[in-house]
Image: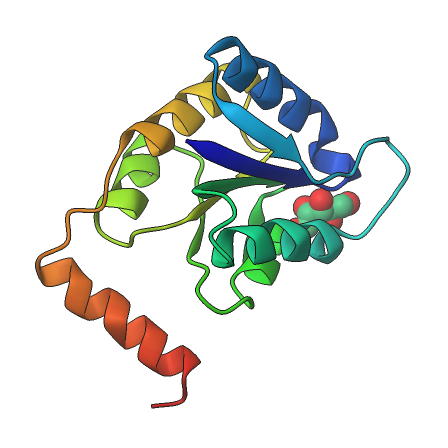
Length: 147
Ligand code: RB5
């Protein structure tokens, strides 16, 4: 499994914790920035990660900003991306199982590191259930394609 990660300055510390955790688990990752605490704009990093995931260069993406909201909204503007901002483990598996989310967004100012790690592990461990959910995912794609 290959995971693309990105954050703005407000999500940098949590992203580093998540990266360390994933590397310890032997999961292949790539960090698309930001790499320092200088103030920056979350859409830039949302776009980099979302593009990589949409092009299937990575299986899933993890984005972190202050709230997880802005970076998630921005990622969802890329065609083929279903980014879910999650602050709990139920949403973290439901967004994979029902929505086939391919990016999870987290807020460093919202969740502590312990919960964030549980959320990430839950997200990565869950799978899309298909079935009745497939039709709904296809309707999201139809909206993207103005059908
Ligand atoms: C940065 O201050 C903050 O606005 C950003 O990280 C994020 O929370 C936006 O949604």
